[in-house]
Amino acid sequence: MTPVEKRKFFTRFEAPAVAEAVLDSIVTPAEQRLIARLDQETFSAEDLRRADGGADARALYKRGVINYAETGADLFRFSDFYTRLDVFVISEHETYRAFTKETQKNLDEWYFSVYYERLNRDPDKRPSGDAVITCEEALSRVDGESRQAYRAYCDCRVLAGGYNDCAAPLQTCISFRNGVNTSAHRGVSKPISKDEAKRIIIDADNAGLMHTANPHTICNCCTDCCYLSRARKRRGAELKARLKTQNAPFLSWPKVSKRIQADWENCVACGVCEERCPFHLFAVAEKQVDRARCIGCSLCVNACPNGALSLERISQGGE
Image 1: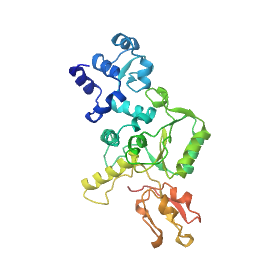
Image 2 (image 1 turned 120 degrees about the vertical axis):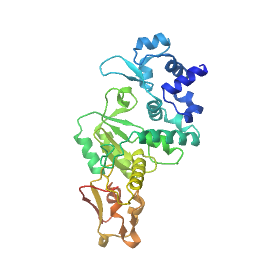
Image 3 (image 1 turned 180 degrees about the vertical axis):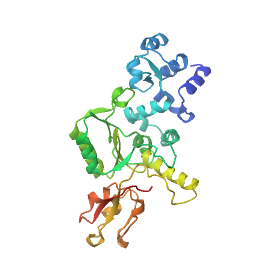
Image 4 (image 1 turned 135 degrees about the vertical axis):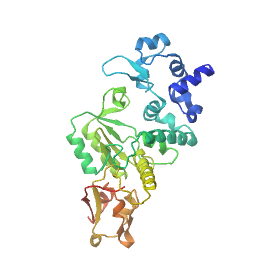
């Protein structure tokens, strides 16, 4: 490509400078030329072939380089680097993990920044419909779901886990979406049975991953990599600073509906809860737990050998 075409590609595809060193591994040179040279906002598969005889709309769509422009119409538009990187890390995770840790860190931080900036940070509104749920609730959700389930690699953990040495499993995302421009429709995520979906949830719980859900997805999250957890922490700090108080009256996000309850008389001081709690809320030796920061994930409850822990339902949890 000429320097002019290179600049045009970076602008049109919204590619960040931090990707330049590994760009050809994520977006092929042929794809870059096509994006730079095809000026139409929407185009057909034939338009693609006329612009580049080797261009295959089906392959470009599967790779997340193009999106369907309209539901039910065979018209496309170029996506952007954010979309392509998401597809890339869940479909070519080994290639991504072969990048240097510095490159992975730069790409992850860029991706997280774009993700975060797209959130609504109004303290009176939740940025999304995500909620913390227990393992039992996740399993029940699968049983009651009429839609096909799909499994994919966790994009958060692929993006961030390599450079922060996260050892949590990767194939933990369960989605029930299969419309146009979704991973399922592109053929990136794979259809699974209800039993397979439930096994993913149980294995994730055993691995110490908490469960979150929205109307279309069940995620199994760690706190180091998960964009939801990272955005929750950043949003909370920003809102507390803006509202000038540590007890800022904003809605919890993801939505919290339960909080830990400890029966210390039944506690055998085994320390399992301290190990399992992703937020380090327990001090078993002092028989204390920071209930105010509990999000009701149930990881400690599931592992307590003496039934000393339970969850109580609350109407509105804090951050």
